[in-house]
Image 1: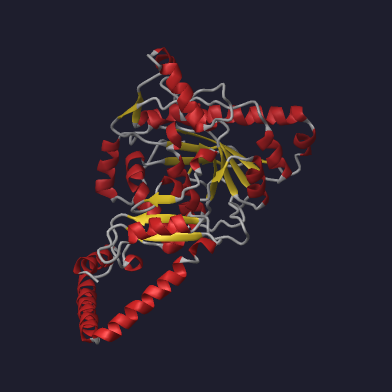
Image 2: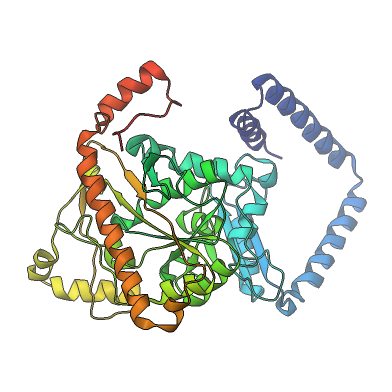
Length: 441
């Protein structure tokens, strides 16, 4: 084992919270052990060493001849900075030999991969969809909530956004009173959260983190199928966006999944506006683009779920959108680019073309969330049998979301801590873990 790998392992132990002296002792012991093993190899008789090498060669030939007959799914973990063995090229070779195999590359890890900080095999297995109870992975029944270690990884990845946007969350009690926090959201599922997207769904991270922190529940988000690619290779020092989506229980948009999640008593997050809201352009901030489909209302009634409409604002406080749809269409090759971009996304409605509008960053403001009054669907048989009743309820939920957005846009003007400079002054005097005040609801 090379010294640089041992040093990296010692540094990893210090990064994970171990005392530097403990890491130094571990480094010294490992280096001494490596030297002892090297001395043992030097003392082996030449004929014994040759016999062992031939034995290993025959074993490798035996295994290589049978690799293509492996029908099970195989996950290959490869160190790209392995100074002892060619792990990267060997992973490619094995993938070509084994039909159902996936590779997870670790770009900055050495030969002792599983002993280094930041390598969590259980998380990788879950992200690859290989932990399951049946032949195929089921995103509802085989899902395992994030572990403590995974939650820490998510906190590391999201801490910068949470610090910049300092989300303020409000909810509505059954009597209509608006309060700070999530007290108005039901404690038990099934619950269907229905609301609006901000640009690229940037509000998802804060929402999921707050529900986990205060409600101790995982919000199962419904997302576009494009966000669930079938990856055969993953290059990542940690988890990428798609891995986090799997760890947090995201599922592709199908009504079958929504029904199964609600039937299982889960908290489900649904954005009826979908990609059209997530990829809006300049002048469309805080608008909703909902289709005229009421399936989720009838599904909630069928599963006796509680619908909670919600709204979120604040994207205009962190970015300026640069382009409008008309501006992009009128630009040279603008229509062709939008058509190609929409085709790449494999949109369910070919009539609605979308494109990323381009942004420039601003001095961060703040995100504001409000969850409306819960709407219990238990006993609402009229919604199941009468299409008009379902349409009326759907229109009511849509109107509630619009009203919440207008409420937040108006009330945020009263928040003296909307600007990050005021929040920094408050946290400097009261502590960075102290909840920053907001407007009076």
